[in-house]
Image (tube, rainbow, N blue to C red; front, side, top):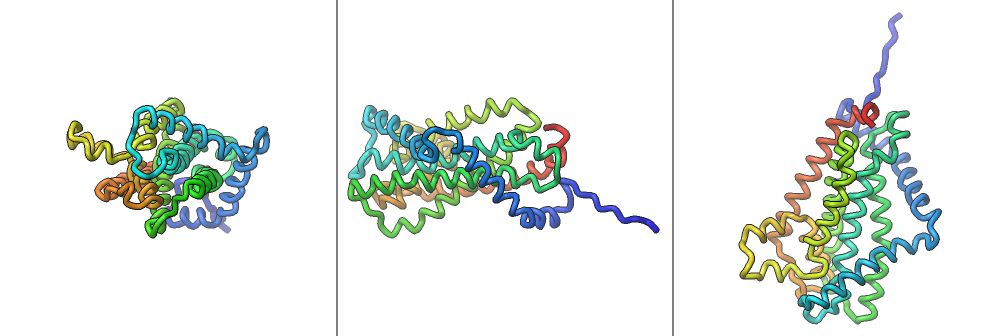
Length: 279
């Protein structure tokens, strides 16, 4: 009697793969919880680090924004910077953690089968938890300065989702590239550092779009950064028309995010079956 063999591989049938992704949701929760415990278990200040790290960025950019006298209107400068720092920290942390996640979990990847997408996705959840903890800073500052959001606040989850999807697409692409080309572990910090300075954290996008000195193609290139629309959207959601959102840049950001997400998933799935051999 002939025996029927079942072959399980990372790059198998797409329909079965996405079903496996759901079936392995317990592993997803375990990896996310493990990363949370590891991140804070051996730190002196523990979970407070999720608040201290963005606070340091807020302090630095508030100082530099004041030094260059960037316009803030009726909104205190520290609120302008905080509303930009929190989504940027979420994006940069998720991008960096996801890009290194496969290398960090190489022992697990080489021993058992499971959909490898679980690994970078679980790190993004951890970064989202950090964001929720740090969001306390923004709430406290808004209460202190008596700034209350209007109905635009209901758009905030949409811009938050845009930041998460951008980080997910970029993280999947970079994590797959990092397995084959280890030079990317040096490239990713450079990308994050560059993005920090070209994103409107210490300044407002109004200063870019309203400038008569900058040619239109520079403004268009500036809009290709998906975090431009995310940060502008955060400020608009929290402070209303004091910081208008530029919808053309939002549409561009949605397009760039969709390309990143589709391209990231496609390339990740394409090379996934070789991870165990290369890593």
